[in-house]
Length: 157
Ligand SMILES: [Zn+2]
Image (cartoon, rainbow, N blue to C red; front, top):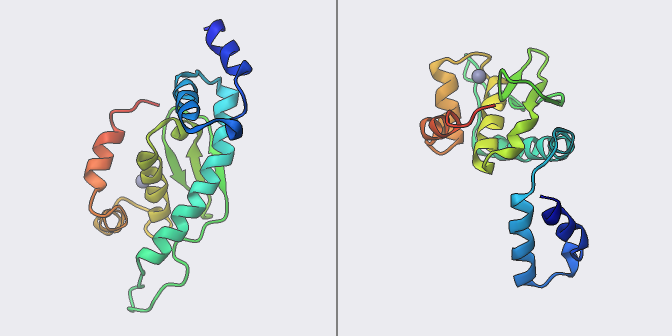
């Protein structure tokens, strides 16, 4: 372990690496263990940015109509993203339109991270797990909701 971290510390910065060198660096990066503090730091940068990107994506992808058939403006708008470290859920959504995301989401494959964010964004439209909620989430994930949920279940918090 000590040998691995010292070799990383001595390696040149990523911007100066050639393509072949950078693929070696990427593998080393993947093998590194992160402390909880480091995961929290990464999550605080990555998750709010990813939520913003997902917000833009879903806002373009679907339109929401209210019970009168009128278009809902900005149905996925949220107030803020808070990063949590808990062992009870990957994410949650409050009635004040705040999204809470578990910092360990950054350890998942990116499509599962996006799936959890999409799930929370859908709760801004439907604050429940109704058929309408699942239809929306399925539409946003291009019909892959069940498959993504199944894959996510294999990961433990
Ligand atoms: Zn939910």
